[in-house]
Length: 425
Figure 1 (cartoon, rainbow, N blue to C red):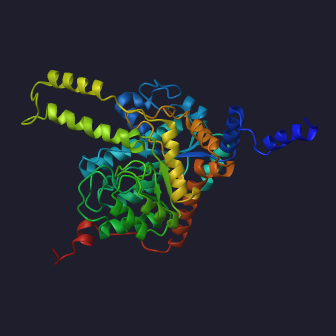
Figure 2: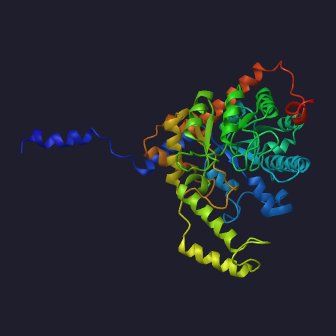
Figure 3: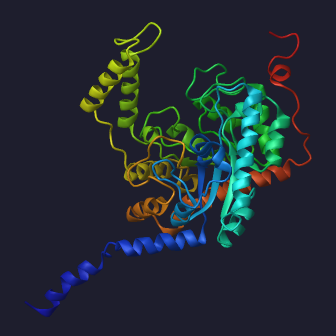
């Protein structure tokens, strides 16, 4: 064979670069996360500390916690290269309004106390510049998100107090429809936002707080996107085209988010990631109701042992579908395709769900997710946008909006005076 013919296949092979070795991928991810803070939109650590540790939450050593009980601790945050975190301040939407306010203040106090106990690890942040500075200093920029409009108890003064205490976003609803906004997981009452709800969005803009549209109905999403002057976020939601859960974001709304400059931060909760898992959970809940639904329903009503055995038999015949890191990456890819790579982020919902996808079972696993995307062809620049660049841009947009609105008067009024003025039914 002639030498030229021997060289031809080698030249052809050289035209196609070899796939990056795992160590090369890991090095790329490390470089990205050194330059750009990885910012997660939603972590329920505070809630889990309350539920699991009780009064010990104020003194428990947070460096290493039982991974069977917690998705988060300081060692795993460091391993996961987390540079910024929106810490969720969640309370039950079923509580009366004043109790929601009290419980919210308690959780804000808990997070502030954690930041004070570990000043070399956490530092409070409220602006994009804060986040960049704190990340450059090797600490975790710590922001607070209030996870439910019911937590303001219909009072603008309470919203402003939360802002003064460091809150950076308000989720307009949680699991329940409230007096001024429809939830994704409750029966609608308003076809979106009421006039008071629109006023809440404008006040959030004036304060420089992000409008968070996770948990809200699609009508509420559309109303908020119509009213807001600043970019919005979805702090922990995924793509509805891949999993038809109402907590997720439709392609039509993704396009509106792109036009707004906002960010959808992808949720890791299995029922929001896998359509198969969502359907399995619905079927399981139906079985539970059919076996024992006191006081009048169920095959084994009043017989909890028989109902438990029947459910175990059903679960044996219908194994829980496995959800994986790759499926979460699919959601990220989809949102980047529909809305653009400038409008997707990470909102893992760590410590807020019963289980997590394989490969994403704690705050130490973010680099593995970025590595998966790198293997799919994501550039370093696009990984940086996903990791934190996009939400930092949204924060800066909210800050510019607040500066432009600084001469506008603070919001006043109540649900009654704004939505049901005197003389109108």
